[in-house]
Length: 355
Image (cartoon, rainbow, N blue to C red; front, top):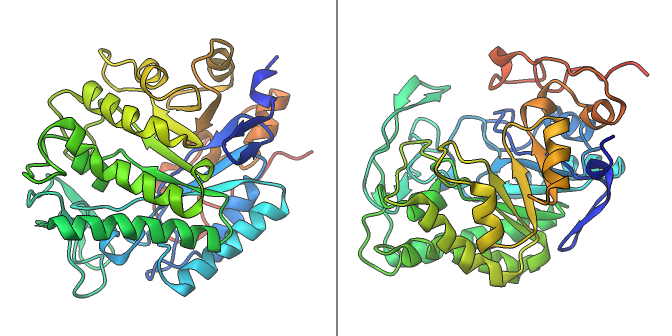
């Protein structure tokens, strides 16, 4: 029996009807100008049975755009487009928050609007390439280092994005603090070489993410703001001299804000127990992520490792994942070739099981 997964849960101001969370997944289905599409309305509403949907990483500004067809939450058209999504999810009784993701140095001038710069904590180009609709695979831009005043301005972009998300009908927001995007670029000693209050020791490198969280919480309410972290993560060419200690510092700074939750991913390295680290330094409002199936998720909840579990890949091919878990039904596979292509195929056209 999977009783714990189907218990209701309150996380801050968020009242979940079950503990099955849909994790954020980049799917590149927005229009080129970042406006959500009809396919996105269908995709999210189909999955509204989740206790909570964390919508995909969304740029707070044009400067923060990392990928082609990535949604944003800056312009009136983008806000209106997301409102269509939230209304469809709420019509089915669902709960949805928006993950805010500034790419920082992860991006290309072939993706961003003309004249929009790529910026970062330090002028260090990330190793690797990014796909662009305009020019195929391209190396990441060499970023320009933000001045201290510009860092504070980006913090305000996050605050405004949280307000815009609420205007669009989202129940809250989640700060994307992992995968090598801007907050993690500040956090990581390998790509933060600053000498001002946002660089140097871990307490300073955590300052940017903390200030973003504080400003968003002041803007829309602390119980509507979450944070996602992944200690040990090196995605997008990030590295840190002591990832566990650095992430513990940010968790300690964030804990007094009384956020709705910390969405913590399992560490990819065996020497870090990310879930235990989060319980020690943040508290009990944890959504666990990475590599769970229904049985291991139930076991984690019984063991008190967290209060909810998020699923990503299982939600791709299974819009009715909650029902399939509840009734012990088989899960459908998904097509990897259509993960990041445009349009409905491989996105909103996976069928639910017949009743």
